Length: 470
Image 1 (cartoon, helix red, strand yellow):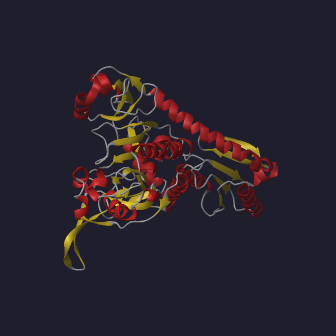
Image 2 (cartoon, rainbow, N blue to C red; image 1 turned 45 degrees about the horizontal axis):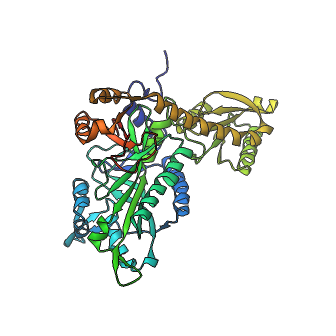
Image 3 (cartoon, rainbow, N blue to C red; image 1 turned 60 degrees about the horizontal axis):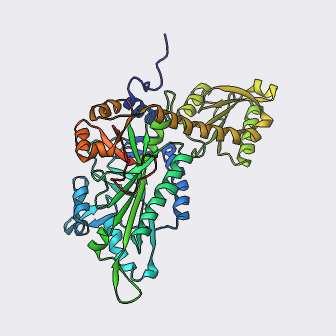
């Protein structure tokens, strides 16, 4: 009788596969309040690595980290009407504290444009104070009606950047730089996901923004996931909070602003982009554990050798764990590491020691082969880079294979059943976008004819990318 699979096969039930993997790979659990999650150590390790890589890029872009309160006076949100209208259904509002009714209700942070602008208006006085470039790592709360772990949760973790500039052009260029050089570079070269960079339609734009730039990834089932966004806020919040700076004379001018963010949703994107029926496949550049050295049996010589190998790999910069828990069956440990998607397993037993070899298992392409123990430290850094490139190539090939050019709304809906459609924005327009939405299909972004990010919605030759989305 065949053994039952560890995970529900993707082809049978992709959502069930996703939930199985989160549970079996020990990434997260559901929290006690509906829509919340408990991120377990291995899952949090993925987020920490994302934070480290992103934080370095954000600081290179000139932004400094700060922190703002999670409680926001309700009156702050009402200052920017479009913003509060966009978030109103998702707000969590505190009306009592310390056993008493509050004089003014406070909102649990859904995003921080309003509270940050309250302080920007104090901190910006002169053109010499600009640009003001601030980022914070925080949690936010949005009362999610259809929660799914990592993808849509009532509380999630993220970074949110907020900047103020002297001119529209400076703000526009900074938002674009975050979009491409921070987010695009990270998602492509670290996450190994071949994201499409584009511009949101007016309907999909962030509440209160004049332009939203997005990064869209195709998941393993052909659906789209918005991986991150960068917004041009224009002067909307500056006018609401009277954030101005003094020019050379006495004249004052409103600042131009941006905001931008990515969240723990990227963990969900990582799972659905690279995972297979055997579990996660973690890109080597991201992996908190790039290689695990496993002792097959509790032989003293084997234990000594796996520890020695671990030290050698660590010395060449590989993030390594030595698994010498021989009181747990080897097969169970191997399956657990495979589920967690560790890129490389180096398996060592008594017979391997006799031959001077170890069995190298590569999680990303699959397969095993014996390798000289003495060659491991020199060989494995190159193997990790090969496997990083393979994940990106597979992501790109899937997106290209499952994206089709279409000319009608019906064809677009059909394309979205299994992947993405590309249709002329001039032909589709807002009216066609509304018709797609009735069928559960959305315009994920607009790209220029050459695949670049267009400067305007109505730029000649713009193409709309349409898909079903998470």
